[in-house]
Length: 192
Image 1 (cartoon, rainbow, N blue to C red):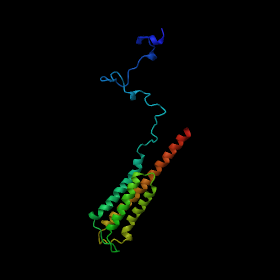
Image 2: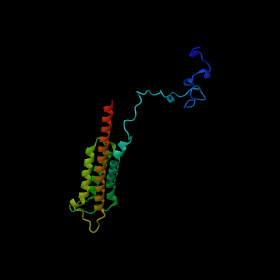
Image 3: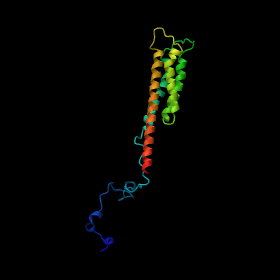
Image 4: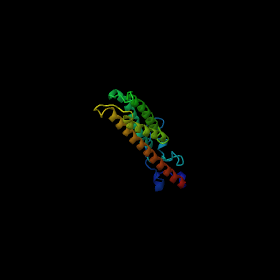
């Protein structure tokens, strides 16, 4: 008897015995007794299935996170003139304008860097310079605070240090992930 004419499951060799389906068959409707096509192992051909190219799928987010915090520091600098009393500077203008303008710059640079941390290293370095200016501004502009060090001077120094540290951390993380991606790509290309 040829293999085509076998009708009983008992006569089949063990390798040809039907296996229990991994996904239950449809019970109702026009698809009764059928399994969805995506459940079959050969539904996606091996040459079309690509594994993710990155080991860490959220490295863009990880590299941009410090810059998002820099953006928030810029927003703080925009808001703080209404929350903290700013003394008159020796030059005769209000240092609140320094915080507002520097806050705009820092928020803009932080936003640009948070969105695209690998292509905007220039924004990170400019944010480092803006943070350095915030640290130096109370002394360069001559904030006059009789007996009150913790006001606008302390705020500018703390915010400037925060911006410098986080901008450098964002630059370091972006450089680390770029080197790692280049190394992975190099080893992947050498295997092919």
